[in-house]
Every structure is written in structure tokens, then in C-alpha cells.
Image (cartoon, rainbow, N blue to C red):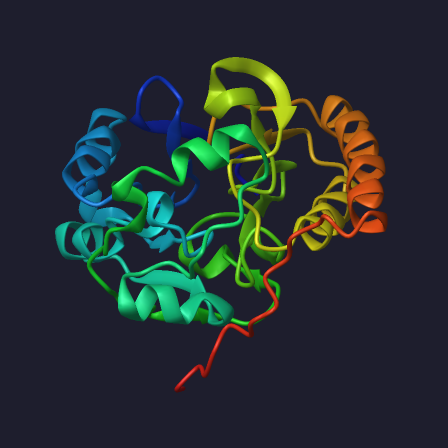
Length: 255
């Protein structure tokens, strides 16, 4: 078994929005950034000595525009198939996220005013439809896709056999990475309690580092401490009837 190297590809700022390159027997890309980021990601892959045509798979962690925005473009540029979860098919197929966004705090409420978050991306049809835990060995990386719902219904993460967890938006660095290494919520969650349950399930598997969509890698022990505090906060909000959760179903899969 060869070790899988996880390389961050900044799409916005130093680490405000990240895609990832996983280097194994064949390379895999995780996430596709905002609309118009396809060439940036392709060129970053090439700078790491990888022929973009060799990419075995593009994994989209969830149906938010800063993660699937350039999936269709990156597919055209590389020829690589795209994987996404069945429960986020609606945003993938329409190019539009489920709205309204549900902010997790002041940062989310501020970002919700940004028209770019409400714009449409180019739709795409996943070539690999994820429904449950899915091995990536046949695509060239010793890793598996893990369903981690909560941030969105179809959120997924990638766990390598070496213990690196590419965690999408289950957790982030504070203020979109402005305070590196400090765990925090991303700006939005569809179901904060379910997301936290997914995060705890992943922490129970003993990951060595969490590579996130917003910010630098996080230490699992520090994330676990944050998660315990966050659970108490969410429980208090729920008891007061102030915890917002998306109740609509993901919609018909049309499969």
C-alpha cells in the first residue's frame, strides 16, 4: 500500500476556499471551487507534477456553490469522472443550492447578502453516484468516501487509509480561515445537530488530521474539544426552540 499525500489547492485567498489533490497510484481531486475555478485547479494540479489527464476522479463533497461550482468545467478540462452523493443531486443538476441558506452565526448572516452565493453554477451529472461508503482503491487512491450528512443532506468526506480526513464543511477554521487552526462552524449548516453527529462519527475513526474546505488542517483532539462545547451550545438552542434546521427532503433523485 502506497501512502496517500493530501495537497491543498487554494481556490480563494491563502486558504479561504480549498480544493484538494490526493496523490496515490493515480491522483484524485476533491472539490471544484467556485464557478470559473476549473483552470486554476487544473493548473495547480500540473504545478505539482501531475498530468491533469491522469486524474482518476473528481469528488464533490457537497452541493454548495463554492465546492461544486466548477465541477462541469473541471470535468471537461481533465476528462475525469465526477462523484457526488445522491442526496445533493438537485443542486448538482440545477446548478443552484437549496435556499434559504441557514447561517450558523454572524459570518453566515453577512455572507448570505453576497449575490455570488445565490448565483447559478453550471449544472453537471455525477458519473459516480454515491449512496454509502465507497472505496476509492479502483480510482487509484487508498481511501474511501464516507457519507457525513448534516452540512447538506448529501455531504461526504474522504478518509485515506493513512488517516487523513478531507472533511468538506463539517468543520472549518474560524472566520473562513482567518484564525488558522481554531475549529469553528462554516458559515452555514442545513442541520447542525446531524452535522455534529457525523463529525463525531469521523473522529471516532481516529483520523490524524482534518483537511477542511475553509482554512488549514485541524488537529483532531482540538476538534473533539470544540465539538463537545458545540454540542452543549446546540442543545441549549434546541431547548429554547431557536435551532434552525432544514426540514425539506432532498427531492426526487430521478435516477
